Length: 88
Image (cartoon, rainbow, N blue to C red; front, side):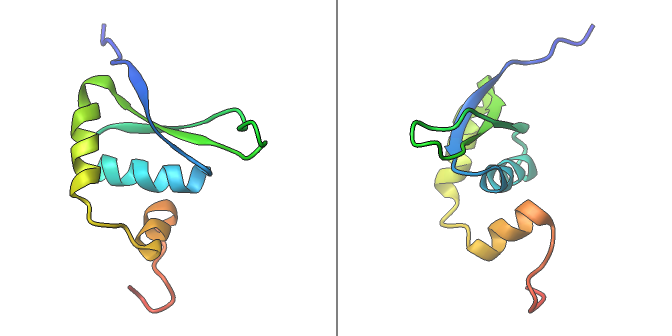
């Protein structure tokens, strides 16, 4: 029997697309992750969470700290898999 490792909430985002982009980045760097939709905030704005395996949360934090900045084009590509109109 394979025991599933518990996932924990790692980061929150205002929308699922942003959370998916962050989760994709973590996945590409060896940190299994999931995206979970949450209840709206008090101001009724949507929220989404990135979950990572608990024992890899420190690696996920390190990866994001090493990332200088992710451009909007990179986030778009990670979320959709599509390149911008210029082919970048």
